[in-house]
Amino acid sequence: LLTVIGDSIYPAIISAKKVSEKLYKQRVSRVIKYMSLFAIPFALFITFFSDKIIHSLYGDHFTEAAIYLSMYIWTGLPYVTFFVLNQVCLIEKINKTFSFVTILTVVSNILLNLFLIPKYGGVGAVMATLTVSYVGQLLIFVLILAKSCGE
Image 1 (tube, rainbow, N blue to C red):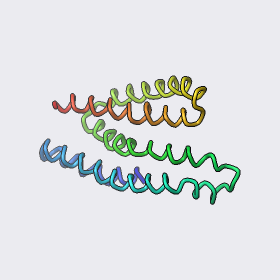
Image 2: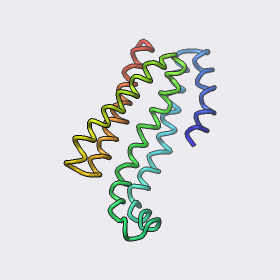
Image 3: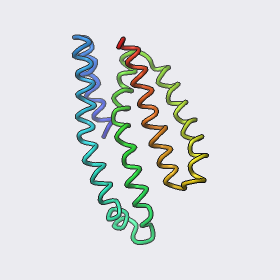
Image 4: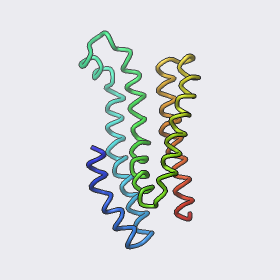
């Protein structure tokens, strides 16, 4: 779904960049806002009904998976913003930076998993993914883009 949305919004973001920097930033901001407005209710639904979802899909044998699902679904929210920022990286021609941050994220996630999984099990794995892979990566990209766009 994100690929289809990305293919449809990428030309609009590029054309906005050609018109003005202000329109470009407004369009990027608007895309993130609307994609988040779709993702938040979905994440809330999954969070509140994760036990019913797991039960209907897998029965009583995997009821503990509901807690992981209810937590892991929130890793999708930063990904929505990351998806748009990835397109901005392409437009701004800072692809090497994107690759570096991605590699740094993978290594950080592995290291945090090594620390958190022995202490907290599956919850630790979800927390590592949410903290490092998505939120951390998102913050790094926002800082890099703010610097590259002259803000």
